[in-house]
Amino acid sequence: MQRRDTGISRSRFLKMMGAAGVAGSTLSVLSCQPNTSATGGGGSGGGPEEKELAFYNWSDYVAKSTIPGFEEETGIKVTQDFFASNEDLLGKLQAGATGYDVIVPSDYMVAIMIKSDVIQKIDKSKIPNTKNVGSNYMGLSYDPNNEYSLPYQWGTTGILYNKKEVGELDGTWDAMWDPQFEGEMAMLADSRETIGAALYKLGYSVNSKDQDQLAEAEAELKKQQPLLRGYFASTEVRPLVLNGDILLGHVYSGDAFLALSENENLDYVIPQPQATRWTDNMCIPNGASHPDNAHKFINYILGADVGAKLSNYTYYNTPNEAALPKIAGALKDLPGYILSPDVFQRLEVIKDLGATTRDYERIFTEVKSA
Ligand code: SPD
Image (cartoon, rainbow, N blue to C red; front, side, top):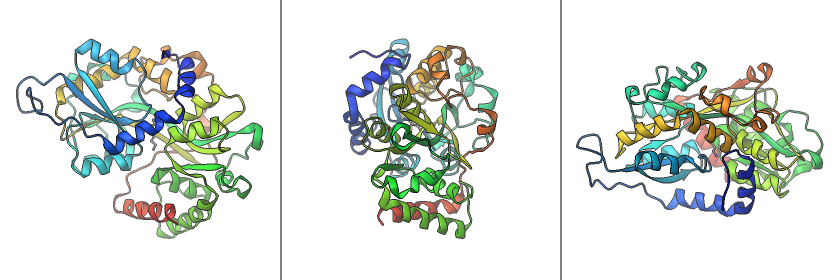
């Protein structure tokens, strides 16, 4: 089965794979363990590393050519596991998973991982392609000197919906609470994003630490829960909307743009008054078995061609300035792919909230089981 990295034939491929590919990824989160074998001198202490790399990533987040290209260039064999949310990733590492060499946490999760001492410093002298990263994506608040992270992809979170069926939305988060769409809506299985949507609906910040505001958001989510088909990974929401199983879905932008490119009846809205903008990052866990290979992999991803192929496949935005001229025109033309200044200024970045994180986790657990 062939698909090109222009992103155009990717959609056909995904249609053929359908939900089966998604289910496979989810199962692998539950069942796979990283390669922890120590034969051949893996780890930071000894001789040359074995020619292996364990990559723990979001599902559907590499181009078809990404991994084979690296294996061919370096002779390093890559194994992949997949997680569905930042919290799943952290949970897996905190539960003692060792051996992953490169992981892809989002902004606030990088800050949590630095604080929790689960990731190691990156040696940027081994990553000359750092020069390709745009200055807007370096020195961000969660890792101000990029000691622990380099950016992978970025995007927004909003609503993918069937405009033909429901008409044009009013552009607010209220649509996701509209009883006329009962059973035909899905929210992300992502505590910060979904509680964030409720906070935005109420006019608050995604980074609120105010207990009264959080209690209001919890009540909103409990009102919304019976109206939903469920809480899913974004890669699962995309086919549900695309195939007409549901009418509205809370998604990450790459899934929205991919769906839009396949079905002209769909639209993507970045709701008012606010929504999130996020950056996912490459980091090396403390327990990495192959830290040198991890540096080689991060450098490879930040190459201009590799970076462009990645975004042309994932439909997310690239922090790689050298890759920008190679981004497919069809992708740049999708409405909302390039953010206008007025949209950009109303987007928030999710932050580490310290001890209040526990309140978010409790709320989301209670809402899901209400
Ligand atoms: N299929 C890959 C999706 C990656 C999305 N990362 C989103 C983080 C949102 N806070």
